[in-house]
Image 1 (cartoon, rainbow, N blue to C red):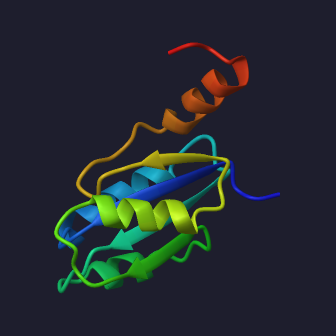
Image 2 (cartoon, rainbow, N blue to C red; image 1 turned 120 degrees about the horizontal axis):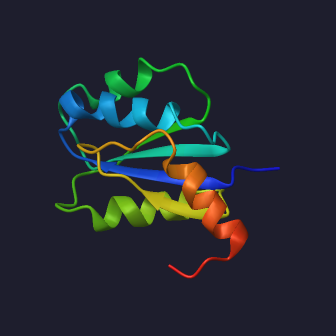
Length: 112
């Protein structure tokens, strides 16, 4: 069984903030997910930040800079294996129950 959520994180030169974003996903109370870090041509330490996490749920993909988050997001969708796609910007973070709340809404088929 694959991941329920695919968390796509588009990033470009956000190494200083990416660590917090990744930690917030890894700290989720619901943990059936994968993380796809879609690097849009960063020349900072983005790859090193991702490599500092030893979690097999994290996938890293670097591509030549496109100039905006749409192409990295679309790459993430194409590579995802989850039933549901979530987006998280590299300079943002989630509360620890974000995915659990989403999962509950999906299972209850609540209209949002």
